[in-house]
Image 1 (spheres, rainbow, N blue to C red):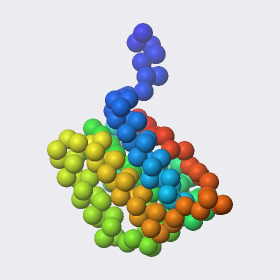
Image 2: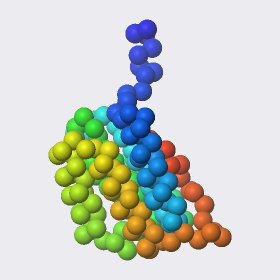
Image 3: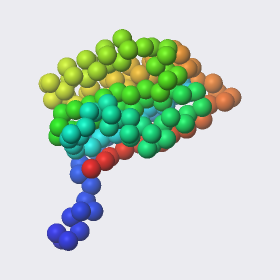
Length: 153
């Protein structure tokens, strides 16, 4: 019924693709105290994607992890824009060179229209970096943020 069309969530990925992304998040976090979130929306008009990612990062309370080691992968599907934003704890450890390389790898996949592959690959790489600098501690680690993909408009 058209009256309720505003309640329908836009689907950007198939169930299998969503599961691949969620599985990648869980696997990345399995060996680290770090947190990875993925935020997908349709458009990022009139805003720099890094600024939009920062807004979302704060809105999802990703800046409140104990070790400041959360990373957001942001994608605006229809506008073909994306960003990777990290909290200060992990950024200090890996620096701009790491993040720039991840963005370049994502761009390569996006140009081939392999969006899911881009997201999964960057999550895997982020997981390795988090594991190196913030290894899992069985006695103290807790999953501070949900693993599911967050879908915007």
